[in-house]
Length: 592
Image 1: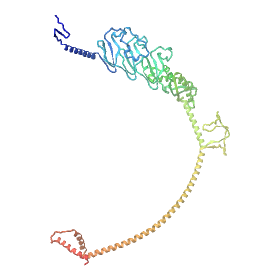
Image 2: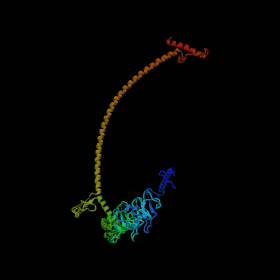
Image 3: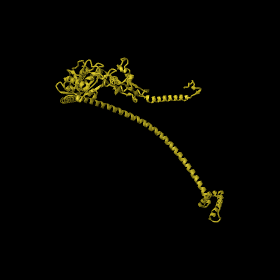
Image 4: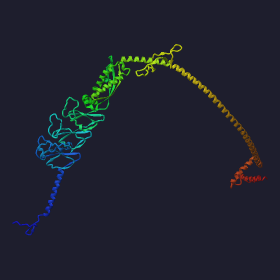
């Protein structure tokens, strides 16, 4: 029999405990453990951490198999190329109906995971380690190659629609791009950069065939050389090497030296060969540069000189040679040695060269003939003749310089076409019908000779020197007289002063003599008095020795205060005399 339990878990008044409090606690702990384990599982195995400059592609492991024509599953716009979609393009992608329900298909996805934290179930999804984003450095572009889609038709190089695989026309610019490398391959190529002074000729490698296949420059967008030019700078749009090729052409002024193997040799009027060297300054015409490039520039010349050599050798040089033969051949060889023939030929050739080269797209800025070389025999003969003429003129001028020119009389001046007087080689006016003026001796009179000029100049110099000498003599005489008067006056003054000074000196001498005589008399008298006093003192002591001894003792005795000695002996007797000396001295002083 089963007992009935009440709502408080009792039966027949008895309570049965099933550990209710412990069970709730265990359930809570179990739930927490499960949650923590699930969190650790999700955090460890389901978390996809994508760092900066990285992305992660996805591959679904479960679902329906994709067809052989399919490479990726999902929306192609999820491959990281939204910036390549042109605005206003509303044409939907042609997607296989099976792909529309892409969540049920397994395989790699267009979708990529960018920077951040993402969670995916590893049972349904697989993903590799984070991949580095595509970085296009400075002066580079990225050319995209689509790996999925329909194969291109025969003869087509670029993928023009969104459902075709192959090379895309629009390149990636500088920067960081998150591109699904399962869907696209990125090739890096140098960006087209044109330096200052250069223009870019664009040759389109793909596109519609030209309407007229017989032209050098096609319409814009057609396959071939385009009618426009690229200015200096960078051009990423035209940096796809599969779509177009840009050739840099130097449009600055160039100098072509026609010398050496490029010199021009042509026959003169009478068949003598003349060699000409010159310099042509030219520049390409910007408006006709594409056509000029197609006509005359090839790959070899581009590498060697940038297309400059071909233009100079195939266009400018043939025109120059042709015009020299037709224009320069009209003159004699000797005309290129003297006169202005070379300038005339230069101007005519330059004009014809400008017209012909302008039609081909080259602007001739200037043309200068640097040197002409006629045949040596003609040049030597002309040089000898010119030397003889110059020597003859020099001798004639020297003669005229020495003896003067002949004086003409009568006649009329020869006038030019405009009424101006004509001059001869020496710069004198030409006279018609004049005769020589004769002197008394019947010889022609001359004027302006160097000899006459020298004689006249010397005569004038002599007269001038004489006048200067006379003026100098007069000046010197007047100066001497003035000097004499001044010196005599000064000497007289000095003499008078000297006389006065002499008298004064005599007076001073007499005064000095009188003073000296008086002083001498006084000194003699003083000395005599002192001598008499000394003589009296000496006579008191009878001898000079005793007087000297007295003076010694007199000087020493004031300094002696006490003497301790025996009264006997010579030393005592010496001091005994001090007393007697003192008494004698006193007597001498008293005059006794």
